[in-house]
Image 1 (tube, helix red, strand yellow):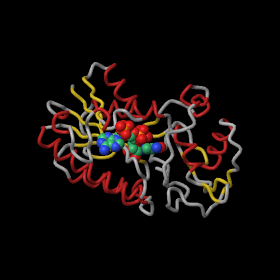
Image 2: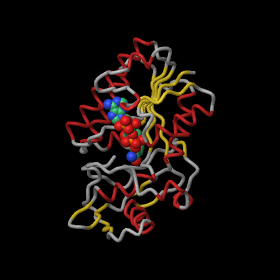
Image 3: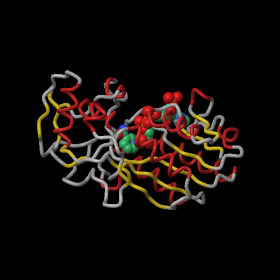
Image 4: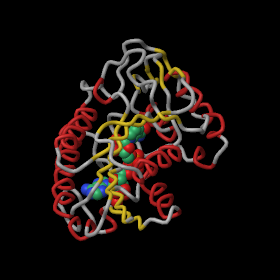
Length: 261
Ligand SMILES: NC(=O)c1ccc[n+]([C@@H]2O[C@H](COP(=O)([O-])OP(=O)(O)OC[C@H]3O[C@@H](n4cnc5c(N)ncnc54)[C@H](OP(=O)(O)O)[C@@H]3O)[C@@H](O)[C@H]2O)c1
């Protein structure tokens, strides 16, 4: 199958393209530096020619409220219009567990808008909602700073390895459209503040992590189960302690932008 991966040069996208190629598919990495820009529409019609499936694992370069909303609305509209014209049979998009519970956050309002456009489109779809990536845990600290300390509420959290995200998304892309939502998560639950503290220690980062019930997550108030997937979630295999010993954990994190996903 020809499978176009929008954001195919990113953290998840690059792993996904490799997996799909290993499975024998014609996987095409589409991103601005491969000549495909979903915001302007550049290169979209060409890359989608004879594609069966499109997987959107792109992300906005800016997470400022208006910019991120514009990114997900404009790029998703452009994509779905071009997919319908090209006869694409399955649109797969990566979203975040709890998105609908996080509407106080500008980033998550943009993800809600992305999901809505997909559901309303004529293109068959599957939305994969993943929990936070292990690779992103340091990024959570970076965007949760108040007066030099990390402030986070001590709520449940079930993060997963980017490698397991890519595996789960590849399985979805190879299967039929669910015309609905699939949740994926990590094999273990933690407290957010506790895991961020462990991650900072592993990086020899001396910042203090304060358990603060009033602290916001990406600009939104969250409670015990906001970030936790439901009982039907497909779980990744990689445990946090195992991941810490892997090369992926030696890279501090994905680049941090204002307002964490
Ligand atoms: N971080 C988390 O813990 C988490 C959890 C669950 C779900 N998610 C979701 O996972 C998705 C992917 O995240 P990620 O961390 O893998 O992203 P990432 O590493 O930042 O990669 C983003 C990709 O989007 C591409 N892109 C940017 N602007 C584009 C445009 N105008 N047209 C086409 N492609 C464009 C980038 O291309 P260039 O490299 O050329 O700029 C890059 O390939 C996001 O939708 C996010 O909401 C994240």
